[in-house]
Image 1 (cartoon, rainbow, N blue to C red):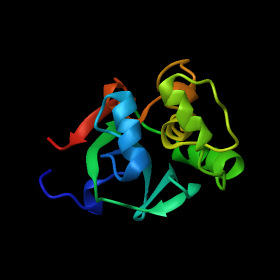
Image 2: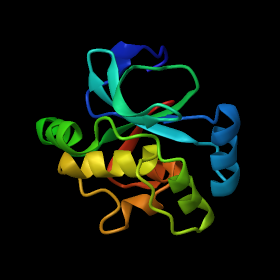
Image 3: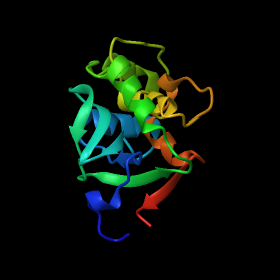
Length: 155
C-alpha cells in the first residue's frame, strides 16, 4: 500500500492525524505523542469526526497530515454506529473545555472532542474498544495501541 488515496480506505478505518494548528500542537505536547486528531472513514469520500472549531458532523475525507490508517480486526456494524451518530452526536459543538481532560482536569462540557467521539462511535458500531475506560479519558494516540485495530498504512 504505497500510494495513499481514498481507494486505500475501507469504511470503518480509523484515521490518525499529525498535529496542526495551536490546539493540535498542545494536544500532542500534553499527551507526549505525535498524534493530535482522529476520525472514522465511512465511505464515499467522507468521515465522521469532531473537528476543531466545527464540532461533530460528516466531513469530506482529509488526507493531508494523515499519520496512520488503522483497520478494525473485526467487522463493524456501521449501520448501528451511524444510527447513534445521527441520534446522539451529530451537531454537537467542539468541546473546547473537554480538552482539559488531557491535562488531568475533570471537565465535561457541552461539546465533544475527537477521541471521545471516535470511542463512542466505534462502541456504537459494536467494537468494544478500550473496554470500560471512560471515553472522555481517551487521547487520539491511544487508538494506535488498541489490539482491536491493525495499522494498514504506512507499512
